[in-house]
Image (cartoon, rainbow, N blue to C red; front, side, top):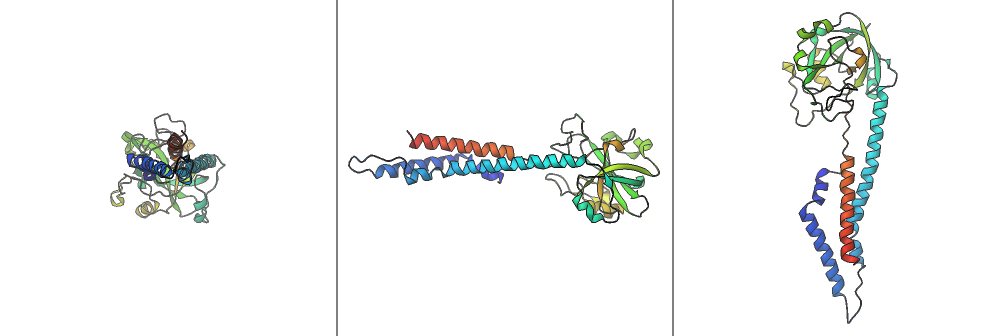
Length: 281
């Protein structure tokens, strides 16, 4: 249900129209009295006025259903993060479309000379206690820093993918400030498969030619840095001393159903009370 529809029902104009409709219904009923005939309050017209509270109640029930569904979805996504890692499907990358939030085992070598940053980004590893820094956070801009993205050549293949090694504070964004963490040679670690994202609202456009990245666009990144359009996020256990902090997988699923639920049920209760005061006196 669109937000503007909810606001419409709370506007003074709506309540004025609803009150006038109830008053007109009463006048119509009163006009039908003849020679002492008793007025009947519960006529077809007055009962029809219950359509608004009934509709609002139905919409509230629908939002309750959607809320339970969304909470279930979030639980499923969190559960996926903890399923045992599987071997990275180098033979068929299309399989990755069905593996978002699943762990995969990686073996290969980081190409640190092609490193770049997505910035600004918050810190989201599980257990981090900064505001907005938990596993499920409200904003990707919750703290000052950047995510370090490093092309990674898979062992025994010519395939190069994008790996989010983790979060660094702003003062450590320059690779020269953390050279000891630029691990060399063959390494093995687990990572979380992720999909590309659209440009979030109020976030600027990426500037690939300048290496400026505000959000994940795998096609742009792959073209710029000569990799496959595949992106994974290294798990927290991959963190090395003085290096990027892994585990920056942020589960973001829009969930406004509770506020809609309260709005529709409140509207139903208020309009029902108004109807009762008019017709059940």
